[in-house]
Image (cartoon, rainbow, N blue to C red):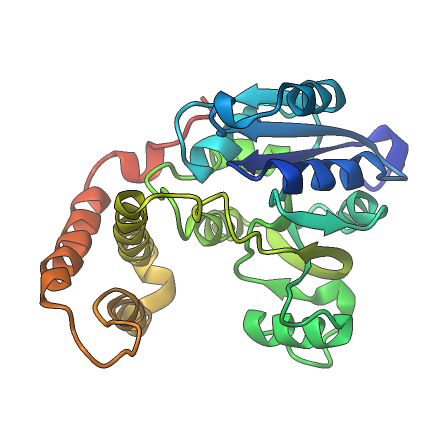
Length: 304
């Protein structure tokens, strides 16, 4: 890759979206302004057609490569994007972000040696708009030492709101695990990239601003769907923990049990265990153990 110029390499931005049309359009406008690299923008849409304004939908289809997916699921949607992508580098973006005009180029330039399999950019949220503060928060979260050289800021996991990988690496590991429906799918992917012998770099110059849309995505649901998502999130944490038990160790699994129990068993005041949720909590971990013994543990991907 080092021998090629930015204009000879194509970056494929993959955006999975659900019921965030106004946010998505603003994100696309920013992506269309990217400089320094040849690019394509892929939208994998899970929004019911009746929620679209036809004029907006025509604009989206004209400006990017648009694919509708009826079956909901972030792993499924991103795998569609991987299959359709034509670029050597695939950049996963959330559908409710604003980005600078040099984001794609910043990701591309991070792949300056063959050891780099992925790059995480800086995600600035509403609670830390200041860039320097955001960098400190993310470096602490990622376990990066303060004096670490920018070129050697390697990490062990990367959220997919502003993360890129080489298509070669993604095809090798067969994309996202479809067993992980709503949570931990990005951490799982990161661990498999590293297990395959590649490194993931943190580049704080590749910046996006996450708007944290109040509706859409996992938030735009009725009560029954919300309860189902909570259970799936719990099950995904359990499945991820069991799947990577060798890497995270016994203490790591205990931490995930505590974390998921704190999230699911207690009420908002965090002081009362809901008896009706106890069986669901146990069922989620049993389901995760059952899944871990199935063949799909390593083969449930959709790139083949």
